[in-house]
Length: 546
Image (cartoon, rainbow, N blue to C red; front, side, top):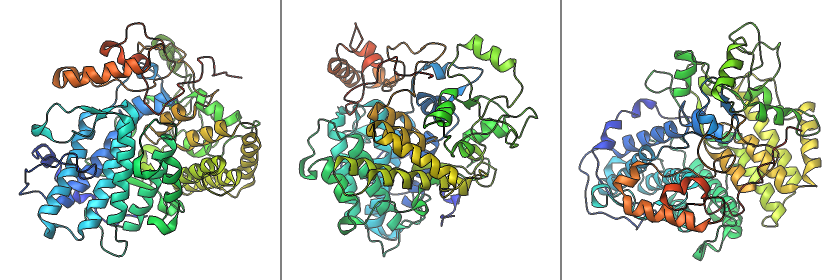
């Protein structure tokens, strides 16, 4: 397994609260600050920021009660309030804290170059991590503090930057990072994601450029010298530019948690330490995987979910079936159904996702997998942006995903098996009649347990007949049958009131007529959506159990 440094580097977490630094380089020249740090090791700050960001996107609360239920992959089976989108929220403060840690690490490395092995490589790795984190934030909220962010005491009321400005800036930062990388020189010793392997950082940066360009393809943005999403994708896949994106499953980028109590993931704590049974697979998603393509089941079912069992834990005994819990019942109905059935009567997420390879909590927090790059290539080939056969690329992506999970979990699945090849044939048959729908569906399936990426894919591709209204009704106080964005944290009204109100009112004005009768900051969570979500969701009756 590809890891070359120890999680023992994660010892300086408390330092993040002591650092009041500004600047963000080419996220960057926006926020240069004269403050100088005289202590803290930048390698430790990098490691802690990487671990902290992984915690924010892959955890018992942030993933299982938020992003997974927004994408309707899983559902709560006893206390279903978050599955019904009440409240719809997402971490803000802790992600910004880790982004500030990365900025601090970069500044200290410049001021004390003797603390790092190679300046360009250190700056590049930290910047790429910042881009990854900032895209998650802007894809959740839309306009966010960015150009004036991370200055702490020097600017405690940062203005919100439009997403149409953030997206080009993120690509520009990735280009800056790519130009700093020397694949033949040492990478950061504090890198607990790629173990200082700069070729991996190069591939990840190119993959992120593809993700940003695909998602922002219809975004009304001034891309400037970047020449727009077509050129961004073409350059990202051109090995003569700055390397290539991911080229195999060996390049998959993820943070791996540890096995000690301090470093394992909190979903493991919930399920295996506290012995809670809070989350089942959503019947909507499981039935979709079983029946969507001509009744040919997706082979990843065996890797994504446990089978049902009447014998109790472990549920995966090979004798049951895949049966999801109804998505987001009202509390009385959910508790009645849960209480009337034995443990393991419904399929839970496969134990590998909280437990990891060791079974002791060292799960993977995905950042980018190879199959995503292949599916982006398929979309770009279909658009005529790059050469290639989109059907063949989709087949390659499914094989890659099946092989990855087949190698990682106990699932007896293989990309070359007749079952997988039959499934691929069914997907490719559907592709001819509705390419956007199929690419959206396959990206959505592959993003299971990838923080907000699956939910973002639904918003981007507007594929139908998958997501639908919670069976117990929407409890979040908004009109859509699934969240379109996350409302700004309530604390912003007090801490950054003027900028918060301006951003909320702007969002409401941009989407007048989409359902809200009030508008303004009070109602900014109900109808607003992120800027790249140009068309809004499919109609509310787009989901059909048939």
